[in-house]
Image (cartoon, rainbow, N blue to C red; front, top):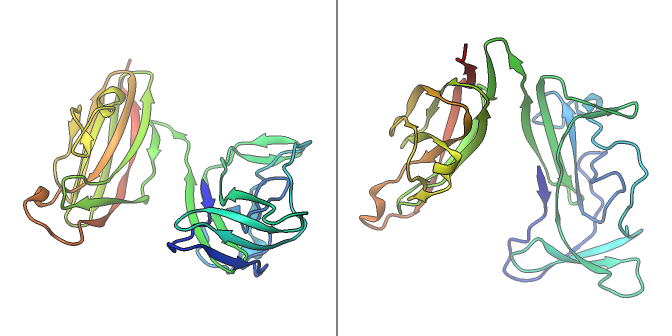
Length: 277
């Protein structure tokens, strides 16, 4: 996951430090940071601040020692560059700006640290809470799934995906790489808002060559449908599920806006079932 701050203005934006954190406990890394934002991962599904105080936190960082960067004891303000996440930091140093940093960071959740050991997350729903010191916050969600008897789930039912449908022949897409070591059957189902989407299943080699937003060739395609269930047999190999928004009019005439978001709901888990004897 990636968390950051972005200046949407086309001018320099000088922002005074506030410390008005919306939720206690938000942070970045085991050392602390100079960032004006933080995050945490909670066990369970939350979409408001209610109940967060008693929520079980995932311990993302193991025991040290760590080699930590320079952390300022006092940050008085952030001066963001125009249309950028890059900012000058003013604070407790001999000269200002103290230094310049890109206001974003990426973290990978590999499990929960418990008594010095990294333990895999048990199956279930999890919530990522991110917020900044000016009071803004948001929630993200993910689900840990496991191999069930009869198949391996690569995209759980209930997942919602947004792709961009386009009027200029360059629609957006969502791609999901996966692999199978044996001959297998891939099944799943989805529904999409109008104007619909097309689902492709291609090898990774096929997906590396793109034509008008989709693989130039593919093993399987649903066609342009608003609701679909699919099943495809495939030999062992590496593949990509490619869900692409609709190409509308394809540049026949100018329509504004050029793009619109289309929501795709996974109605039946995308599941790999081995068919080899």
